[in-house]
Length: 159
Ligand SMILES: NC(=O)c1ccc[n+]([C@@H]2O[C@H](COP(=O)([O-])OP(=O)(O)OC[C@H]3O[C@@H](n4cnc5c(N)ncnc54)[C@H](OP(=O)(O)O)[C@@H]3O)[C@@H](O)[C@H]2O)c1
Image 1: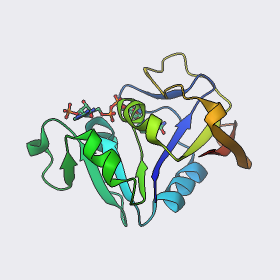
Image 2: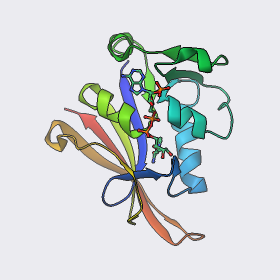
Image 3: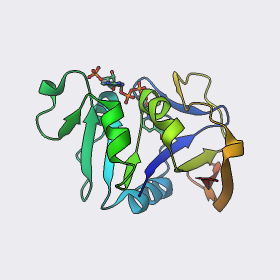
Image 4: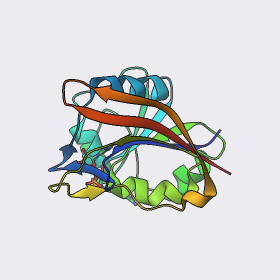
């Protein structure tokens, strides 16, 4: 039972640009689906708005200071309340940058798709975290033929 984080990052921790993802790797989206299916997924309002649709099989919790604008899902404006709740319940923080920054200190597992590419136009980045506090395990190494991208799925698990 813990706060888990999942994100896809470039070599410089690039996360997104212009409100959207930088790289969309279909096999990686399947990894995201497999890890988050059946779980509560917690996200910032901008990430919610960037989703193509409500993701099936997962409870969405959207963090916003304007809850009235999102009637179709659960909303919250109290990060501390969520941190406390997800000490005893499994949940996945799925972004974006502002939300990762506020939860990273409390994350137990961090699943990073580490993409061997850079994006100079990125405008949001995954936060720095103290990797000495985590055991790093490479789960697999992949190659996306379509976009000619090498990437790894890596799990950082708190010591
Ligand atoms: N590579 C990846 O794995 C990945 C994953 C997810 C997202 N992304 C990318 O990340 C970018 C979006 O990230 P972002 O940082 O710009 O936006 P975001 O974190 O998705 O959302 C920001 C919004 O969350 C709400 N919020 C944040 N902190 C809050 C708090 N303490 N209390 C209440 N509400 C709070 C505010 O909503 P209101 O303005 O409504 O109050 C704020 O404007 C996009 O480019 C997206 O594609 C990448």
